[in-house]
Amino acid sequence: MAIDFSNTLIVAISATALFDLTESENYLLELLEQRPISAIKEFRDYMTERENDPLDIGAGYPLIKALLNLNHYCNNSMQDIETDAPLVEVVIVSKSSPDTGIQVLNAILADGINISRSAFISGSLVAPYIKDFNVDLFLTTNREDAQQVADANICACAILDATPVNTYELDTEQLRIAFDGDAVLFDDSGELLYKQKGLRAFHDREAQMRDLPIEKGPYAELLIKLSSLQERLPAGLKLSPIKIALVTARNAPADLRAIKTLREWGVNVDMAFFLGGLEKTAVLRTFAPHIFFDDSIKHIDAARSFIPTALVPYHSTSLLHGDSYLTVDKDAALLSFKPVEHPLFAINP
Image 1 (tube, rainbow, N blue to C red):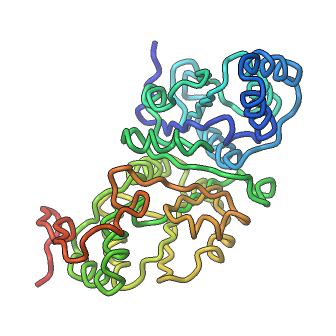
Image 2 (cartoon, one colour):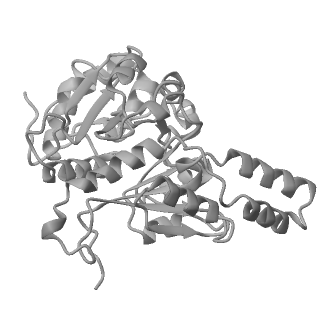
């Protein structure tokens, strides 16, 4: 009988985001450049010799550990383990061949990580297989793979870079995730308006539309599913299994609309920080998330030395992609910024 994963949070992570595979990746690139004809065979031999060597953890490792720990809250005495789906499922997606991926599988076994599903696709395009696994979130170190998944509107996706300095110090008993607002949880219209017209225009629009929900961004459905999962976990614990924070540059009057939007989605975040242009790093260091999702390279670079960060790519059609908004006529009518009637909200006169 097939397992129903419709209520399971499914996360796909590249092998390079779970473990530090920098050495082997660099060696393969060197082989392809110097001896392209024999490179694949030489690399296979190289990996075979090292398949039992331990691996250092990657930037996504603490998040995956914390996510999988949520499955401990399942009451296995009331479940048929063979058929019932877990709260969280993790899939390893690697562009290696199955043969050269043995080191990763051995590392998973050695670390006792409960990951049973994997895909080794030998350099093929990742996006179609992410769709096949019904993934809610895809984490990778490969920018092209992330962009393809983002452009296909398959799921939330992000780019992880180097392992931050305190990855080993992050506890995994409580899952903590921090999200940026505009262009991440919310659509990119606010971000675009701010960059094209300035802060005053953005605040004027937000004040006018404070009772209208913001359109969903690429991470909205992930947040909604996380919130639903949170409701299924034990309540009243001294240490809540999940903590979710909104960390945004928005401030009054744009804060009210953000909170009302989350309410409209049926989501209650545990914390919200409306920083109004203040540096995000201080708050993030205190919150100590297992991952922080943001579309701004500036914010990612500021925080990456202290916490695991993930860059959210813009859709290729977005004017924010590649700073395309800079070429837009400043006097052009931005129709998407005009208030729209919504059945659940009314604009105050």
